[in-house]
Amino acid sequence: MEEPIHKDGKLAAIIAHLTFLGPVIAWFINQEVKDPFGAFYIRQSFGLVCLYFLLGTLVALIPNVYAFYGFNLFLFILWIYSFLGAISKEYKLLPVIGAFIQKIFTPKK
Image (tube, rainbow, N blue to C red; front, top):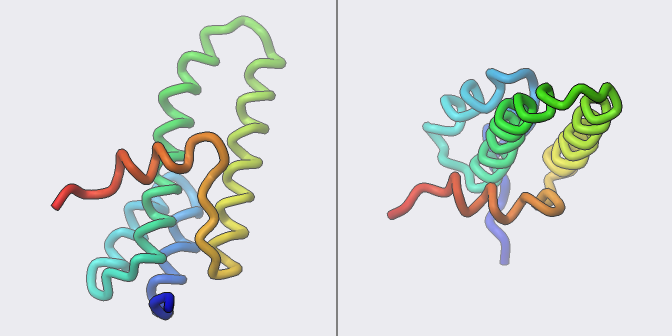
């Protein structure tokens, strides 16, 4: 049986997708309740932001406008996929990079 999703967990999951500061704001929201659903989407959204900055700098070095637009379109599609999962209260792991992001950003006990 799955754990029920707390309303602050859903709020944190949605806010994590808004702007680059969203994951930080959502992290503070999720500190009191520590909802696993909110934490899942905070990690996922933070991973997308990191991916945007890290790979975005490499793509910017390529003097091809199609690479730039293709990269941004790829990240936008991943963002939409993740955001729809947060809204629908489903754990939707990002394709290709989701498992890696969850593994990297899950705190070790």
